[in-house]
Length: 235
Image 1 (cartoon, rainbow, N blue to C red):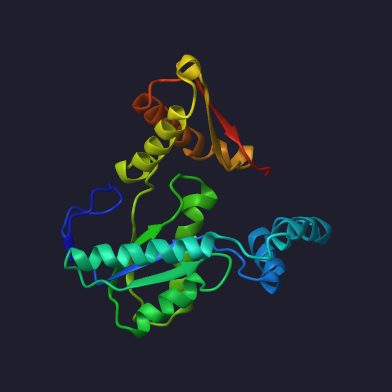
Image 2 (tube, rainbow, N blue to C red):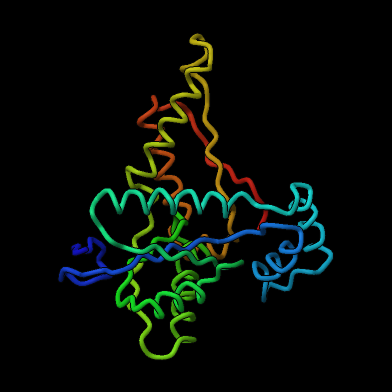
């Protein structure tokens, strides 16, 4: 596969890739995974064991299984199918930050398979420390753990304003408005929800600006209804 990178962080020369690294946050797949997962997520943040146990109960009420890994498997399968349909012989390697398979496991397997240069897709659409820079740190740490021969890895840009991300959102919002009675539709508001981040993180990243841009783009494509950006979690 030969492609010209479009992001300013890379040079203008054509690059040849022989693998894809797919990175995600990860999640528990059984009760025994819940506490180790939460310990990974909160490491270095001084979160008490009592708080971890409290959060663990939310996961355990669903059998200790997060849907994120099954969703990742579905996306990876679709990606592999799309690559094959395009005639691109690119193996896809999956790594998670907080649970198996870990980033280091994926990079080690890539090294053993002889991958020399990989393109990296991260499942976070928005820029923030935890959504972008920390994944870069994960990659750097994984490469540092593996002796010579590890591949070069180029991370794709965040995709908050990419058509492939926006179009499904637009379709869902438009479909929801169809269910609103016609007499109320024009004034019906939209609440766009997102994961919260600490204020200090928001002030040193483009996270909120990118969220608002996504909201504006979706709103403009669905009738410019009144909308508000709200947060669904507590940092």
